[in-house]
Image 1 (cartoon, rainbow, N blue to C red):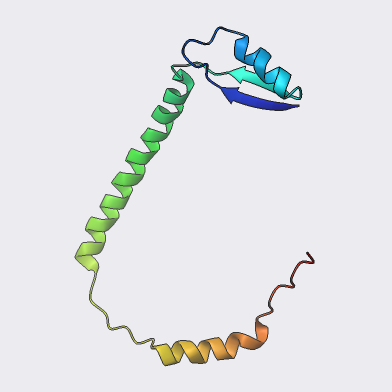
Image 2 (cartoon, rainbow, N blue to C red):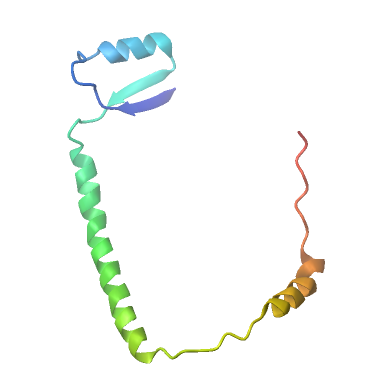
Length: 100
């Protein structure tokens, strides 16, 4: 059995879409969700409190880092990367292809 979660279309009579769906797909059970989706509002409210806390922490870190940050000169060049990749190449194993 498979569950299909849906909301009713305006104008559909209750039970009509369940009958139609069960004729087309007998192994599917249709579960109607509330049209106003109040449960979803509760989930959004719950997670919005975390978003505010995370945003405050990020802003505090930004202020702290702006005070202590110093410019630096990047010293890792393209040739350094090529040398590193050449050194790592013996350890890299390409995944085997799956049989078609």
